[in-house]
Image 1 (tube, helix red, strand yellow):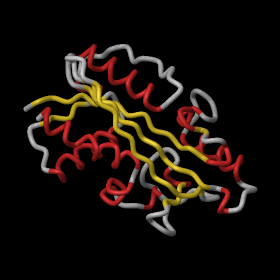
Image 2 (cartoon, one colour):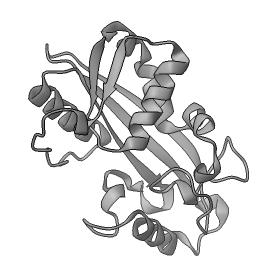
Image 3 (cartoon, helix red, strand yellow):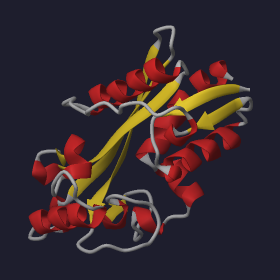
Image 4 (spheres, one colour):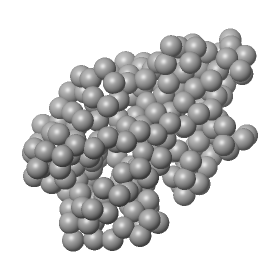
Length: 201
């Protein structure tokens, strides 16, 4: 059994990857989170792009653990906000802001725009860094519009205010986990990484 470190303590992200691997029939790969390895100093996400931040996190994990390490950097890009919050999505309302505070600030900023002007997309970039130096990047995007109020109890982050084009009438937070895996930005980025996961296994 080969180990794969996911440079995240987010249990939902770990569960998502485990579901995707199981559905794809990738056996022999144990998915570990940050709680499963010796603690190390997490790097500052100083990149100006999703790609840079994903690589920063994956390189740090591979160096500290000696294990192949996967990291993702994801964000919410709103067209009328010039693609912001983007890489600042997790701290849009401040460095210690809650998901709710971040969502409320976005809603305040776009509330006066008509639906066709509230286009947005989720973006996810996954970086896989192997201790021998190999680095692989994959990217996924999920298009839709920003809802004017939050709905749904699933997901996290901006999911309750995102109405995907491919799930009409429901926010991302109203989708079943398996349905979200098949449609989402992170699901797409992870699916493109599957051949590399299989090679590790």
